[in-house]
Image 1 (cartoon, helix red, strand yellow):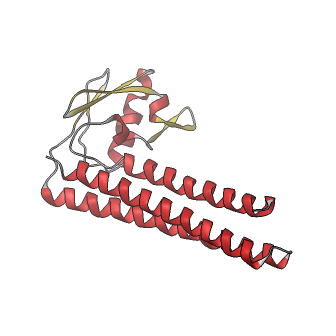
Image 2 (cartoon, one colour):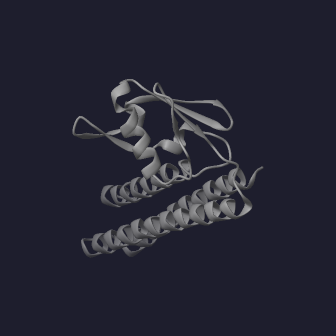
Length: 187
């Protein structure tokens, strides 16, 4: 395989890996029934005029399986943090005691678990669409390379490699979603 073809394959691989990483980031925040600091990832708080990730402003711990504790480094932003956690609409009722925020993680109902599984599957489908988009882009590049002098056999080999890559990343998406589904449905 020539250098341009290898570069095309590497770009496709990088794009597919990026889709997989994005999926992992998206499903990390889905609740599984146990308290997890990642449940609050993605929340940003107005801190002196700048949107700052909560993780950079506070210690987030889970003293037990049903509770998350947020202890801000600067007590003056406690109310802002509380407001943003409530606005995130995660189904929590955070309690402010003046020093830190305690969040009781309620038990998931069967219906809520099914909704979370559905959401995880949707995230997985979005990742697959992104992977197929990377495949399409790579195949278009392969056609361009053929027009620039790549032989038919080399083009066919490149397209086969692209498809193998697509299959590999699609099956990884399925594995991740299957694992997350087990975590969510576990009591």
